Length: 479
Ligand code: C5P
Ligand code: ZN
Image 1 (cartoon, rainbow, N blue to C red):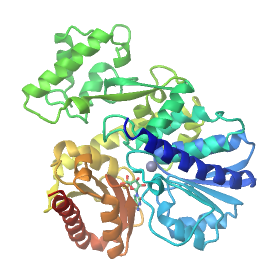
Image 2 (cartoon, rainbow, N blue to C red; image 1 turned 180 degrees about the vertical axis):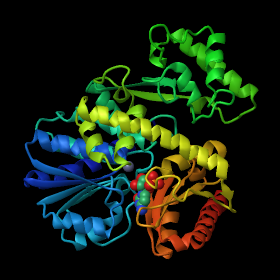
Image 3 (spheres, helix red, strand yellow; image 1 turned 45 degrees about the vertical axis):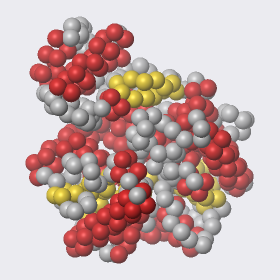
């Protein structure tokens, strides 16, 4: 709690910037909302689109996998009065201004240095907060939506979507709970009665999966003797005297408090017995977020399940479906999202299988795998993150996949321990990609790039060196 005044100052400074941006937005009628194709980008867009709808403004949502020059040309051609960029834009401020766009940028990616200034640039990095762990793109957009509220507090319900976006960007992973400015947003959502938080098991599927399936599909943390083994999971629960189901399979939310504690204790005991040290209490147990206005037993009730549902839409070119779900559709778009979710899950399982079969190649300071066409470039980052269960956690992991255009998509993921040791993947990727004629950026712990296909080896060498420098610099300054 020591840093609370500091957080208040950052919160107030960003809110002040939002106030100015809101005045610019309120003066215009024909608005474009440009966002990113992941859970954070979708929720960011939905927050702003809902705020504009409540103001009876005309708006058009638009999504990009990456905001590059040609995406900006497309945006410029639409001739909107004003463009609101959410969950992207901070790396392209110069290019946005070069096109004379009237723009408000509400992002959390590491900004690149430039002279140009849009109408407003709202980004946690500009007030000394970390955009990887303290505020997401949807969180930044939520602050803007608050400033756009016609009656003070009337957009506070949108905090629930900001929590989903932050969880989708894994911002709670650094300390097992949302922190910094995210925590402020969580508190606002809690006061508004739309979200609650508590400590619970962190396995995926608490709302929707039968308990034995929740165990079987657990990837992070990986549970030796249980993950991937249906029969073992069923036997494990039976041994504990936990009933699997009657008419319907029992889910985690159906278990009594006593059954839940008994299960957690048994999982930990089993993990320790298998000698796996990475099943640490903090990875299995942590804060979880419940969206109180959503129906129990459905994905949107749980922030983590909701974010996966959204990724299953936008990352496959169906951002429109995800956006409609975020804006309240629980019928047609929700059903469509569900169908996509089944395919997404299968793709992730296949992706992990590919990595375990082909292996991960270690270099001096990084490790990598090349999925070629076997994993879609839009989900290769998720697979890279999940692959840490079978990789060396002492170096970052890079994943390559071929894009539709024939370029190479690179996704890089680190651990928060590595970030504390000096790792900054956004910096490493943007520098190395630029050196080989590509573009890259993102966050210290997770970043991405697109590079020419022939440049893979050169890029790997650059990355290996930059990461080596980052980690040794910190070691030097730490001694
Ligand atoms: O695509 P991937 O999931 O690997 O991206 C990781 C992070 O890096 C995301 O937050 C994404 O927005 C960001 N990124 C970026 N510039 C790129 C590629 C990815 O800022 N060229
Ligand atoms: Zn984001």
